[in-house]
Length: 99
Image (cartoon, rainbow, N blue to C red; front, side, top):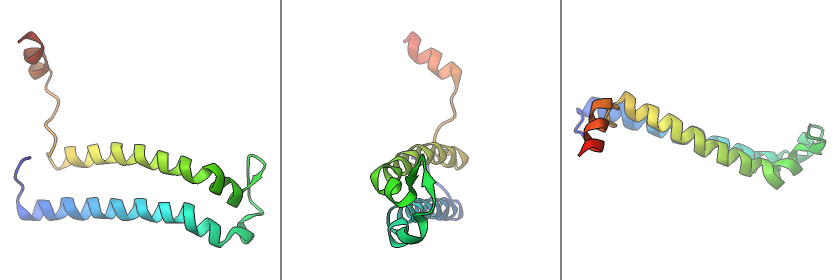
């Protein structure tokens, strides 16, 4: 891993922490808040099923899987932005294949 100056490392850590807090907030929202307000949310339907039941049966799981993919994509972008991942160099790939 490349060494970073302290300011840049602090900015990277702050961004990663903010993203993790957002992901955890979404997780709490789809797993606990829907249950807490189930009576009020039962008027909303998803595919003909009341929202609290849908979120309890499969909606939360689907949301967590989608969050995993978003996390992977966004993490790659953040790492590239801060220079933690080497940029793809087609010449390096050709040299590695030819050896």
